[in-house]
Length: 608
Image 1 (cartoon, rainbow, N blue to C red):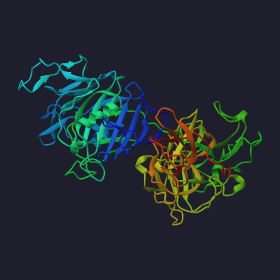
Image 2: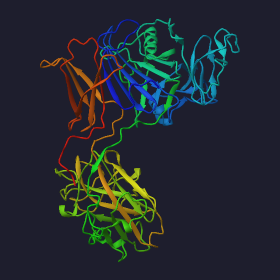
Image 3: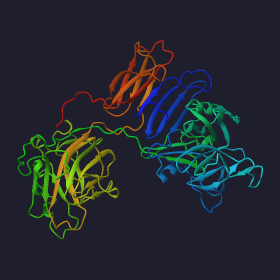
Image 4: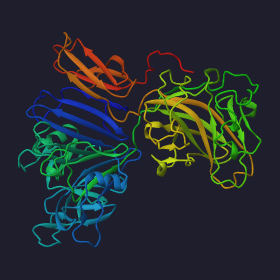
């Protein structure tokens, strides 16, 4: 796949041409939101304001797959109408875009104009002279047209049958009304004015291009002609291109992970932001490209201790019987919480020491569970402060199948992450079953599963986890199923057995390597980059809006080929950073690439 870099980036500059010289006011942001997918966001001010989204998809990339709207079977017409967003959600697609022209035949049933096939089911024929884009079962991308002399449908002057040129098996196929780019030549003739447009193209290397330009929205984008669309496709490497259904149908959706509309459609009454039900959509399966979370030490990983086991309940987690909430569920022994050395660790541990818990449940209990409290003193690594906007993870080994929850408190703690926080606020279970989200319960739901006999890393992505309130019949302690503060403390770990044989043998659980994410979220796609007018004798100013405390590298180019690193920046608590280029004056072309950096964060106070 043609791509500038292999990490999520943003590029801004003046580079778009529609068949003539470079035009003023172009701003281009380039990202790779999915593996094998490059996303170009192009804003152009001359000769008119337009906003373009162009995707280049490498069909050979891992995880790439395709799907066209399936047939409606024996119902009238070909398909059931559907919004592009709903199509993506229904089939679990990462990308979706509207495709064929269509019209209503009965109720919600649509007749598609031109060729359409979904997973090998060819359910709509070629129209004479109308082209298509086909992706075979093994992801070969081709421009396809009909055999001209195959007039096998009525009326004979309109339908031209199914036989494709080239002779490839039709598998996932969409059809347009006009061939606008053929063998690298712009051949568009349908000049019906400026409108939103959807188009598709094929590169010489067999990559797929998908194109959407907004229109009928003067403050945002006025639209383009099919000739202009063909020129942009050609500029980005296409040798063939077809015009698909545009106007109010033009809609591009990303699922990252939830479906969202990327462009600004004018689907209903030309009202910006409204979505139209269409007869055919085209989708892509892809692997989500994520910048891995960077973690730093939240608690000591116990490596600094001696091989002599610590006293029972002396460090981080108290002994199992300490909590009055669940002590009645436990047998008298074992009742241990100790840091032990490598000679007693289960195999597969990456560390030399770990915190070991041992307990047993009494028999004949209804929904047994165990709450193990953290300490409240700094010397014992007491109730650690965490951010509810970040992720926490740790390693677990259990001798039997269990599930694990965090029990947190909404507090006003303001110290460093990992320091001992305020012992106040309502109790909330984190990471339970989805059906418990937002509810208030007296016993916890099942949490994240830990299979018996192996080490498992549990990740609690707090902004996206299920939150369940714990009703303890105390107004000062009762949770409400909501994280109401930006930070709080880990008050306990909760263990719920998975099997009914919980009382046969004692439980033995090892815990280690507690960590917290440095960044507030997983960056997906490029940071937002804005260019501001000259200020205080600085001819160019980039305003970067990205992930909190993330590092960004700014690079400069005159030709989009050779890049020079200018500066590494660190976003503030709001995710913002500023880059000033005092040497921008007099440059004919200036391109600025902003991408996530692997540089460590700036020095800060060390957390325990």
